[in-house]
Length: 425
Image 1 (cartoon, helix red, strand yellow):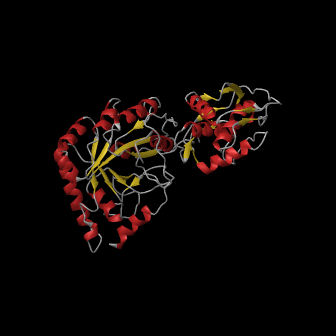
Image 2 (cartoon, rainbow, N blue to C red):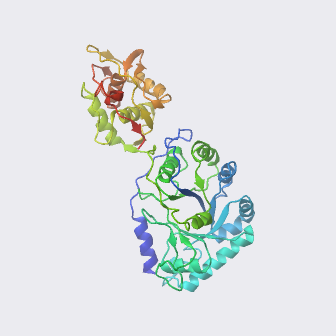
Image 3 (cartoon, rainbow, N blue to C red):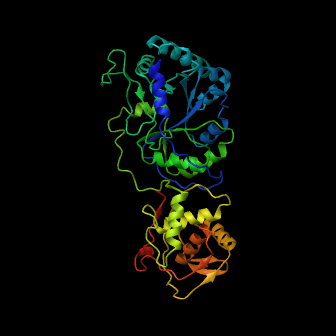
């Protein structure tokens, strides 16, 4: 019994920096093609509601989902599962370690026969409701005995919940060899994909920020599983994501069994170099304070207010921070080019403004801050250069007097004045 629970404890111990949710109507900051193929996976167990709004959003664009359900959930929602299967979604088995194998009440780990028996009962239950073959198997952990059992039962895709950074889908061990060689069975073990923050493949929350993370991972991995928690209110946001990202960028969304088959083709997982695309770069509040201090304290703007942020990124972040009523602890950078033209420095200027007027200007600017940073910005009735605007933004963010004084761009003769580009990465 020590074996499986020690594996679970090791997995849970990995750190996961939380992703702050943003408003449901916030813009998506990450828009990119998927580097390979994607599984949209919906786990269903316990009191999870049927994901009707999620499937309705996917059905609008003929995008398939893979539902992984426990036998108990299947018995309670048989009609829904039959309709989902008829609509083209895949329904696989989620093997519950507590419900199906009663791990906590056991003195020893399950043997091969017990794994096979639990899988057989669950698969039979689901097939009775869907009238379709059950080819996908999901479970929390995958000890060797469970892997051999899944192969013996004829599953095509085995989807463990384990953090996998660089592994590739592989053939499952079989009872005849059990050593991972190429002569093993037909089932494919498919890890979560290119997640590198320890948070796993499940969407942390239904928010644009949560879906931005999924986009950024899909843009970097030749295969990715994206877990979508069931939520009756998810439909409109998922529709917006599919119409803004999945459909225009032509994502390859596969059922789990299709993903397993695709991995058999030679070169199927040989990804090209990761394209230069905008993916989220999340910056914490302490970094923003350091960047603001570097900008506010000098008359010569630095190219890089912090080692990891250029001036355009700093402008974007300060605009977001000043325009948000409740200050967030992090800001996810967006795509933004520097000013096209650099206005000449005014050698003699001292304008005093109110913090409220500066914040109001940031709020108005934020809705227009798409693609290109303007060269001239109106703040409290005054026309400021971009350099002057970032200076007063930084001072207000630091609760200093809202005063504009003479300030130099990093390099007036360089493209964009030396401000750099915010790629969102």
